[in-house]
Structures are given as structure tokens and as C-alpha cells.
Image 1: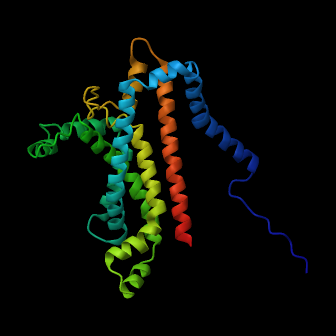
Image 2 (image 1 turned 90 degrees about the vertical axis):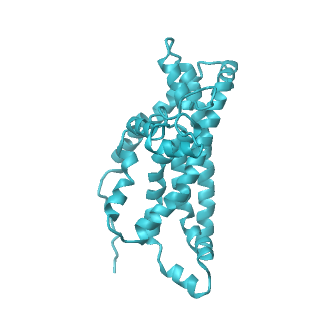
Image 3 (image 1 turned 45 degrees about the vertical axis):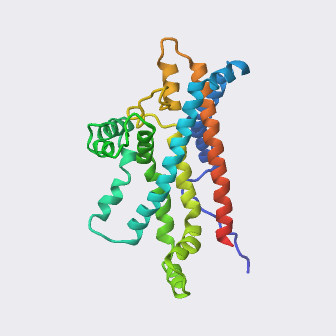
Length: 281
């Protein structure tokens, strides 16, 4: 009997055509814009480049952007896990509404979010007034920056965890309980290892988004060099909107920001791969 080789069919025929479209779109939307950042940065000599990025206000802006984004990403990881768990494991009235509201930071213009948050958390705002009574000032401080970054980053963690939780069988928890493990041990040794790759993915996306965020933090940050509330994105906009537009300086700062984001995402990816291998053993 002669067996004919089964022919694999594709919904989109033509590897050459589809690959060409993919490379073209990737080049136009990602590679060429990133290359332009390098090109403008190379207009500066190394001494000029170093003098620019080592200015005290620029260094402080990098520390503020990275530090606040890191804190916000950690907060989002904790509360995003709780939100995803509730949405997947429990049924309650208004569940669909709550689930759809998770997408609100994606749909809402970031400038609108920034204006709303700065008003609500000001000393005269509803939430800011309550915080002021216990001695916490939110608007125009790093606390406000973290709040804004938590707002725009929480959907990344929730949406990264939900599919994994939906596929995670409840029988694992039942088996752990039957073997005498308490809830803390079950979560730490049975559930968390399964969720760790997805949790790291959400953490990395929220962190990368927060480092370069502009619209939602520009109003609530205060942008004070003295108070250390300037973000890197704000300094870049200053150079582009000043009387003498400094494309080279803006590109140089953006290049450093790009390298920081890339290194952080690379490190998180390596941890994610290691966690995935440990889970599959």
C-alpha cells in the first residue's frame, strides 16, 4: 500500500507573501523607528552623550521612573493575582461588569486618566482629602506617580493570569488538601509555581509600560526637579517642546530608557524560562 504524504493546509496560503508582509510591518512600526533613535543619538560624541545622561536631573528622572514603575508592578502583581483569582474561581452578581472594567485603563485616554487621578488625589479631592488626614500627600509626589502607574498596569497582570487560572484544575488543590497540606502550603508549593511564568509576564509588561509612561503621570507627578518627581518621559518632551528643539538629546535619553527596559524585560524573561522549566519537571 502506498501512503500519500499528507499535505498541510494553511488558512493564509503563501509563506513568502505572509512573511514579507510580516517583515515589512515589523520594520515600519518597530525596527525603523528604533533605528532612528540610534541614528539621532550617534550625532552626539561620547563625551556629549555621557554629559547629557549624567546630569543630576536626568539621573534623578531615571531613578524616579524605574523605581516607581517597579513598585507599581509589584503592587499590580499582588492585587492582579487576587483579581484574576476572584474572576476565575467565583461567580457573583456583576461579574461580567467587573471583568469588563479591567479593560478600562486600556480604553481610557491616558491624559483623561491623569487629569482625573490628579483631581481625585489632590488635597481637595475625595480620596486625597482622606489621605491628607492621615498625613499622606498623593498628588504631586511619588505616591501619586505610583498610583497612576498601578492604574495603567493592573490589566496586564490580570489578563496574563486569567487564561492560566482557567486551565488550572481544581483537583490539584483538592489533592493537596487531602494529603494534609494547609492553604498557605498549597498556594506556595502547588498553585504559585504553576502561575509564576504568567505572573512574571504580567509583571514585566506592567513594568515596561510604567517606565515610559507619560499621559497618566504628567498631571499627578508635579514634575518638580527639587522634589524629584520628574519622569524621563517628561524630560524628553521638554527637549522636544523647548524653543530650540533638541532631537539628539531627546533621542539619547530615549536610547538609555530603551536599554533599561530591554535589560529588565530580558532579565524577567530569563527568570520566566527558569520558572517554566522548574514547573515542567
